[in-house]
Image (cartoon, rainbow, N blue to C red; front, top):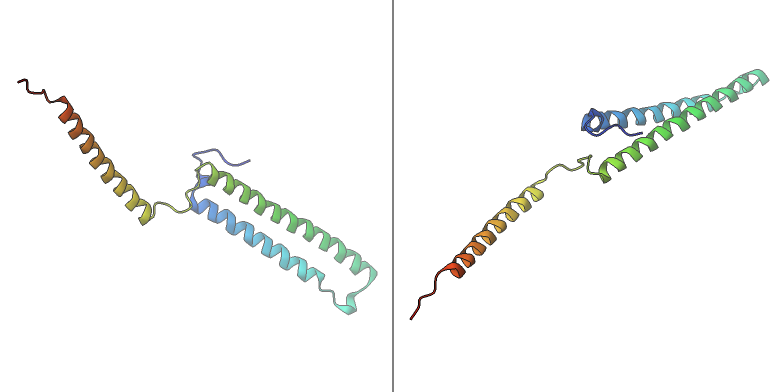
Length: 127
């Protein structure tokens, strides 16, 4: 379940930290799995093979859990982005310029409307 709106879990540092932890967890689990899969030929006894198989299965489950955590984080970030709680780009120069241009256009249109209204309100001269 994603954190509540207004919580600190939505800030950039927190999300970056969670992404970093998830990435490190997957890397560690994968490295551990590969290390356990490397069996030295002189240690290939039945007991050692059984123990190694159990350890590989445990590391595989841990790797799957780490991947599920990444998927959960991805889903949470998608929800945040879709509902507008995740500011992925911030206000860029283009967006700021567009807002300034829109304000200027609005001011010009308001002046135009006021001038047209004042022309219609003037009393007409009677002959």
